[in-house]
Image 1 (cartoon, rainbow, N blue to C red):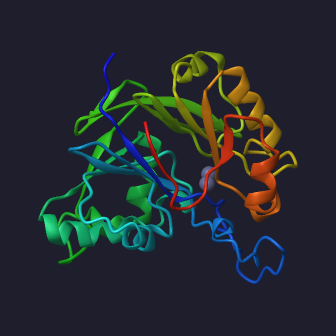
Image 2 (cartoon, helix red, strand yellow):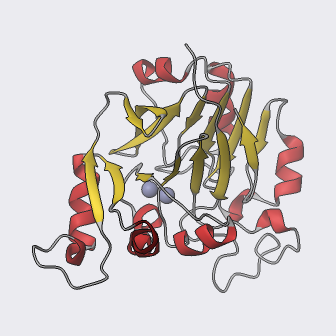
Length: 258
Ligand SMILES: [Zn+2]
Ligand SMILES: [Zn+2]
């Protein structure tokens, strides 16, 4: 199968609190290494024709400015936790320049929360200047976002269903601590996989570092990157150096082509 060539930009690689965490003076939060500064998790996926982001957390506005994004075709949501949706209001700038609604792809469950948390964007008679959002319902069937093929992958975040996404040769999964065997089949064959790895200690709703390494090995992915990282994981340089070949920590600003 032929897929469009994609450029992936890591806009944020931190857990819900970000790194540094407010008021924290631990060695990671005070590290001078830029790779230890992590905004909330999100990626940008670009083909020649289409630019989309996965999730728009509280840092969305700054992530768009930092990456110099001038045009955005779509936002695809993994789930409706605040660290993944809080920045949606800032699509207003894209609405202003494109004079088009922002295409949002989300499950029914995620849409319910979006409508509850941003009700003013969905009123019959809207206040001028509120976000203009076109909701598109996704389930587990593959769909196209512009010219980018997207296959949703169901993963579990404790008891909450979350969507991971396969974009051709690339798979992105955040906020998971369990993946059913049937869904693992959808990931196999990916050249690059992103998976969440919160910290070294076990966690109730996120894979630990060890658990994510095990998934990457089990699925025989040539290159994996870990994201949604807590300050508790340790410094980027120390942890990255300990990882097996073909597995690295992601960091904000990392760009890969696949
Ligand atoms: Zn999260
Ligand atoms: Zn979450």
